[in-house]
Amino acid sequence: MTLREAVMRAWMVLGMSREMAELGAKCSNAFIPDAAALIESPVKPGREQEFVAALKMIFRKMDAAPEAVQAAVRTKWETVEDELIQNLIPEA
Image 1: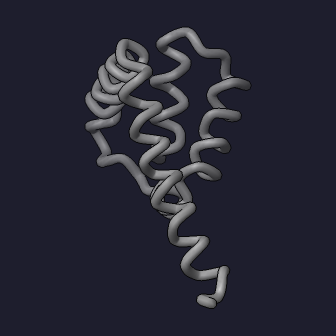
Image 2: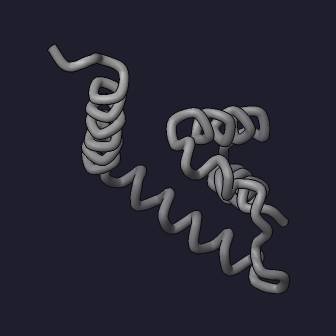
């Protein structure tokens, strides 16, 4: 099982459709490009269910505190935005 499959399984166990779980995995790759390289990494054999259970717990916590998730995403975006500005806009 890959990390992508584990994430999708956790979302589906929490009630998300397979199509939405696949879309969510694709969006995660777009929003968190650093994680895209890891998404095909294997989960340790024999620990798949434990890993999926841990992901479910994380997703439940994220659902319980959407403001915290939004703040983290906003912070990440501001960092990316700053890097883009520094790398793409020449100094005057």
